[in-house]
Length: 258
Image 1: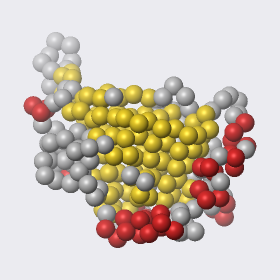
Image 2 (image 1 turned 60 degrees about the horizontal axis):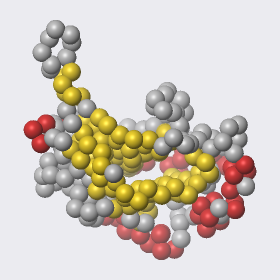
Image 3 (image 1 turned 135 degrees about the horizontal axis):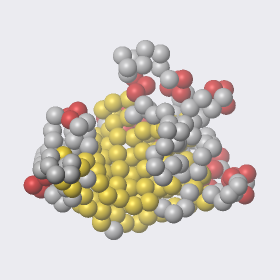
């Protein structure tokens, strides 16, 4: 599957087109709550400044104001610069939980897998089976900020975000290089598919591997990989940004290792 972003020149009726906006994507028909979600993607190559490939889960088709959401966003670059990957978590329409990482490979040369493990204990973002981010839940915080109640669709899109995506918006999209193409394969979902009013699998998820005890924590080998990621690849972590958050969000106190 290929998703292609082309420029659409848009202007007021009777005037010359002046603003370029574009985007395209796909979504699942089904909603899911908890499970394993994975896709192999080969990202836009060459000069992709301002172009974002997004692979994400969202509880609302229109990204409504009370949505829950789990995001992979791949931030385009100028030729020769490193691709950055941004992850984010939303609950009830509130996000601001960004992390940014470098990748240890060129994601435009071949397919790589990007996966999310989601259960009531943790959310783990994986790249090629390497955990790059762990977002924990805790009963002691009374589930202050953990999306665990709303089923989500799965989406992917390629869109123009040159107001912020590359060097904070300093690098703009070069539309003479369009179309911008991301290619997808091996979509894999092993999860609880939502059924109204309440799917039976939610109350019996311990029958599934993704919500058994071993999936509530990182394994020893995953911890080794995760420690390497934290040392070498993290560009930004909102839990370290005391200027933006003088009082850090409460989930920042939770250990990813336990």
